[in-house]
Image (cartoon, rainbow, N blue to C red; front, side, top):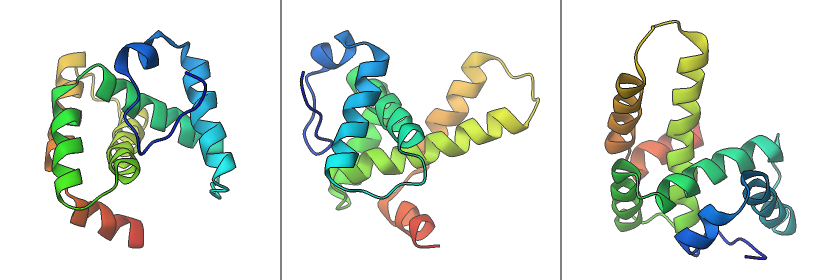
Length: 128
């Protein structure tokens, strides 16, 4: 895989066979070539890559969200951004609380948040 395009589903086996840093670098290259202005392209690319990893690994909540958000009118790229938005919120919560929850509980909270995600809800947050 020599290039990444978020509007086209990368072959899951090829994507997951890549080194994680190469995945992130491919996402960065896409955004730089597209001249997308981002506060932190590396962080943006890392979250992009995490969502792509979840899609490639067929994480059920993420696969359902991709389909649901697409049916609600989002491009594949925006679906990744919407799920990434939930992921960023989830990470922020994890980093700022000391709940002592087990991994399955933390995963269940993330899955539930992804399941609640709608295109309208994401758009409302983006517009704020």
